[in-house]
Each structure stands twice: as structure tokens, then as C-alpha cells.
Length: 223
Image (cartoon, rainbow, N blue to C red; front, side):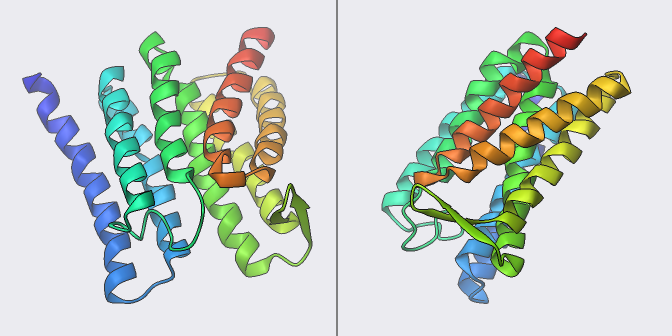
């Protein structure tokens, strides 16, 4: 336990800085809550890279997931952290996001295959985060899925970032280049399709889990 004190403290410090930055922008400078949500969304996703680098055991991620889930639920009903749940937006996305980390940690991290957790979470963090930013700013060609409005600009951003994230991670763990391209393309399409359905923020669960499962299945089929 003593050997884990400093790595865990580093992760907590990193997350604290991300949330403090978002809260400061929201409360002190009146930054749009949707933008500060994306700061937390993208920034918190990167914690899996720190955990991977520090080789933290799976129980630390599962425990953090549980705590974050509770905080997200409390913030959903009580606006204590507007940078996490934007006002007037009926979404449990932050809760689902935290849950997905715990589920993937149990399924893959604990089995010594952290790359699949990293693929799922970083696709959600960067893909969904950038898709929202690009879609809101440049989205001109819109469509709807079960009453949820999306833009093709945002969806294609999701696809492109998902391909890039998957390619980098699979290359890092020495997967052959042709397999990297095939798997990354398939996952990018799946992630884009899953992100299109985001009622109540359920895509924060389906995208990480779906991307990780597809990556695991394809890699084991092709290698």
C-alpha cells in the first residue's frame, strides 16, 4: 500500500487540477458549462494513460470509478459541480462515463490487457469531446436519432479521432500495421454509430464498452 501512495496521489492531484480548472472557468469567468464539461470529459479520460504508465492495480481504477459515479449522481441532483453536469441538461453521461471505467478495468485491466480499456476510454474522452466541440461550432449538416440532434461534422470528427486514438494505442503495443489499420477503421465506424445515439448520455457507456469489446474481438480474430 505504501508503494502506491505516491502514484495514487499523483492521479488524485491531476484530477483535482482538471476539476478545479473547469470550476474556476465556470464560476469565476462564466465560461459556458458545456465547454467546461468537455474540459473535465477529456482531461479525466487521460488519467488512464497515467495509470497505465504508473502500472496501477485494477482495484484503484475500480475504486475511483465507484467514487466518481457517486459524485456524478450527487452532482446530477444537486448542482454542486456545474462543470460536471450542465444546468438544464438531462444527462447521466458523467455517471455512465465513470461506470464504464470500472467495468473495463474489471474486464481488461485486471487481466493484464490495459490497451482495451485505454482504447474505450480515450475514444470516449477525445472522440466524443472533440465531436461535441466541432459539432457545436461548425455543424451545418444535421440529423436526428430518436430526437437527439447531431451533425455530420461532429460525427465525422468522432470517427476520425477514434481511428487516430485506436491506431496510436495498437501501434504502441506492437500490433502489425495492417491489423492496426483494419481494426482502427472498424472501431471508428462502430464508435461513430454508437455516439449518434446519446439519449440521457448513454453513449458514455456504450461507446467505451463497444469500442473496447470490438477491439478485443478483432485483435483476437486477426492475430
